[in-house]
Structures are given as structure tokens and as C-alpha cells.
Image (cartoon, rainbow, N blue to C red; front, side, top):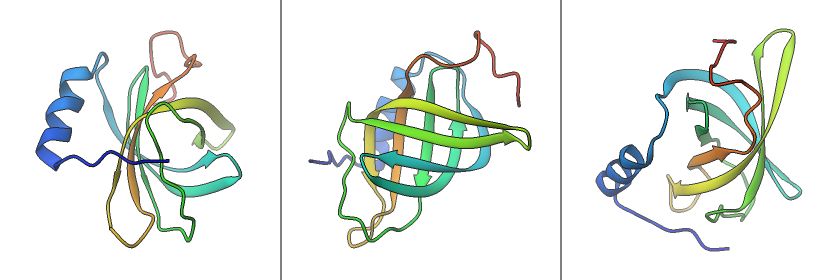
Length: 119
């Protein structure tokens, strides 16, 4: 799998142009599962249709390619766990020799009706 590298300014400009929904800055611990590999991370921001996740270092050689399918798991409340099916839209490797990523994902069939009521 390949990873498309872009400069930070190019990425932010493209990212802002493509946003359809307002994003909310949050900090939920989460896991991202791709095939048989699970990464731990933090949700940086969330919208009705998308999510930005920072993953922690992992020994896995996996790279996230655009349109690959992942499952994002997190607990917005102590009584609720969400398992969101997502497509990777872009991924940026944060450290050349480690597996830390910033990943932008589109949520497939979001579980809320046009609002993020659990926030």
C-alpha cells in the first residue's frame, strides 16, 4: 500500500476546501483497525461526515492508502461505544521511522441524524 505525502500547508488547504461540515475539536481515545492490525490513537476533530485521528507509534509496517476501509472505535460516553466504518481520505506519516499517522477519514453511514448530540 502506498502513502501520498504532501507538505503541511498543501494538506491543510486541501483539507479545508473539501470540508462539508463544521468540525469540533475533541480528544477521545480511540482505536483504528485495518485488516488484522489495530492502532491506538486520539480523535483530534470530528464532524457529521468525517474524523481526523492521530495514531500512536506501532511496530506495524502498515500504511494507510486513500479509500482503504478502517473501523474506528471510541467511547463518547461511559455507557456508549461507537464503531464507525470509515474510508481513509488521506494519511500523513508523522515520523519517517515510526508508524505515527494523522489520518483523515470519511464516516460511512454516520450513526447520527445531522447532529453530534453526544458532545
